[in-house]
Image 1 (cartoon, one colour):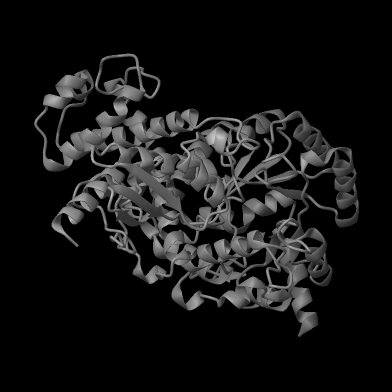
Image 2 (cartoon, chains in turn red, purple):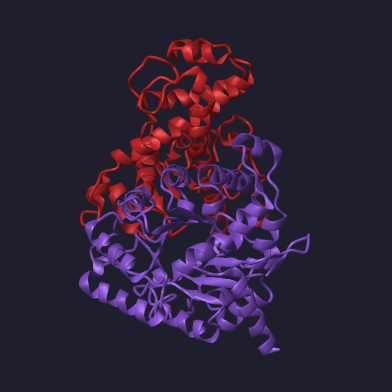
Length: 262
Length: 338
């Protein structure tokens, strides 16, 4: 492979790394869903991906495929993007729909009654809570005062001096912050309402279940993917802590992520 | 019967078992093959290595093996059959009430037989429910709200058609409504995992119990939130409990959340046999202790009392099983066999 080829594969992988499974709030690359990236002589990009089961929800599958296509097409040199899902109940509808640039309702004319925007927002807000909890707990563990934290506006949070882990958690949180409107405060509830210092621990207790749910599902999906494609459960990585997938450098590399140029 | 370290006996009701036939002869189409492959994925990814079955055995293990795994080698005293029809995928169905009833006849004190309904079956379905109640004296049903039927891609339990069935259940004394809200069969755009419909039913039918199987995975967070508000909502541990082996850290956190939001009176053990066998699940659950930092987070403990409730006492209460009387019955039966 030429250096130029490798650079471009890396660029595609980095773009795909920004695409998340909406339910798990993790990168499709980290999850091991992307199995092959291929760049053609005329700078077209083919991406093959797979999912943990034949039954994985069509709407989520479609959403991920559409996001992958858009992420690849955002690279300036790409002339076209082809995203192909492997071994799925709706393989034809999804692959053809994505290839023809259809939205979900067009791809499933007799079945779908909804577009994907509401799903995107619903899970975006869960992701907002999960990332917010991780950042707040990190700041508290560094000794920041709750009153001072909750007084911050967004630019104040951006200016704050942080350790490496805090920088990653803040970046991830701020990507989701625009999903909630309302107050200019850096930290608000999903409804855009203020969080009070005296009830902060109750609030954190309350949203904790969102992150836990995502982690638990992630573990389930990794296990199913490994079982389906032949790696045994003995090969599972060591058990991570709850926020590990959001911390730079600590995310366990999934097995079976064999991204290659063909 | 499980004997605890202190010598006390713990009565086990396995809230979720199946006797299925996914042998090649019974598979109707590719979906039937993929369905059992997916079940096998759950089995393979969460079982201890020494508990792994070959795919052929997993497809059809048979009644003898089941009785041995549950009651002879395994610790179950009783088990609740949850039917799964899937007649579009399997010629004779995957796991039907009629098949389960054969085993119930042979072991009447061991099995509790649950039925099923589908509100999209209209008046005919109500008649079938009447017949099930009359013939099999069922006290519970298992529902799959995500199941396809004709052009329909699932239903909500809060729809008027479903309410007719729930009213009929109340009248027939079918008090336990097990709802599969979990890893599911063909969800499309209708959100099959969404547990909001249970919230409505639980309020409108305070005399019925709603057992959300798999604790609403993958929406455990939403499930906890509705369960805290509705006293007649329960969580079934099938699929959640096997994490105790490969992912004990996650299991600790999840069971701790369930103890926090639902409390120890509203959690039910279920092996989901044949995906997993109760022997290792109960063994590990009894030996399990919550780490200190997890206990600190929720302020909840997993005591021996809580374990006894989860493993049998809660289900006994829902199904009207008198544990002391049942123990006597079962020991007499064993004496007769011997």
